Amino acid sequence: EDKVVQSPLSLVVHEGDTVTLNCSYEVTNFRSLLWYKQEKKAPTFLFMLTSSGIEKKSGRLSSILDKKELFSILNITATQTGDSAVYLCAVDHAGNNRKLIWGLGTSLAVNP
Amino acid sequence: DAMVIQNPRYQVTQFGKPVTLSCSQTLNHNVMYWYQQKSSQAPKLLFHYYDKDFNNEADTPDNFQSRRPNTSFCFLDIRSPGLGDAAMYLCATSKGGFFGGAGLPRAPQHFGDGTRLSIL
Image (cartoon, rainbow over the protein chains, first blue to last red):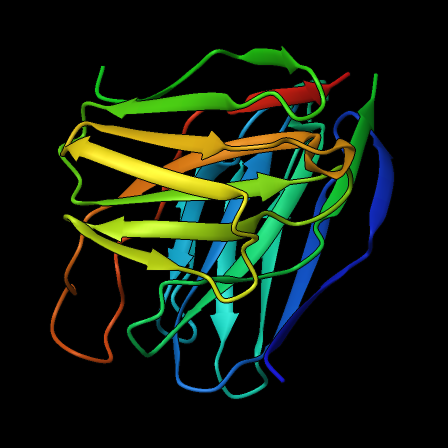
């Protein structure tokens, strides 16, 4: 059965810390891996990763995919209280079905 | 700004009283999705439209219906809400087709702010 597993489930850090969030997957016919940030409302798209070893970067956030070992990491450097959110990982797979396989998310709390 | 807009942000309805949630988009995306998300859970896909083609998930209850009168709008109808239907309902859109051909990446989904539904 296809699955996406995120770790840790929750994390508490202080402002300025660097965090690494993990997403591993077992999905047949992989297309892409997506990272979303969810605060009190709907998920906001962060990155889509399709190729191994190519880092995607946006400000203090970066992400990379390892298609051989079947995982991705999301790094946040110099964390701020505004980074507090649930970070969701989802995998898209081949086929006409557009159903993403979602992880349960990592809840990140950044304390001042 | 181009975006996905859901109305209302909060909806309260009575047990068994039909309710309609709406979603509009200015992104001109041809795929629209409805998700249900309960607390501390991942979003659960209910159905999606690819242009006018409706695609229902096998485990979506018959109580949930959808309409897409045009490219910009999509509605979620809950015919007889039960207490278990209290959740956040998320609308998302994406460009259809593939970036480079079959088997290659599809465009990411972009979400609206959601409607939080409460059942009394």
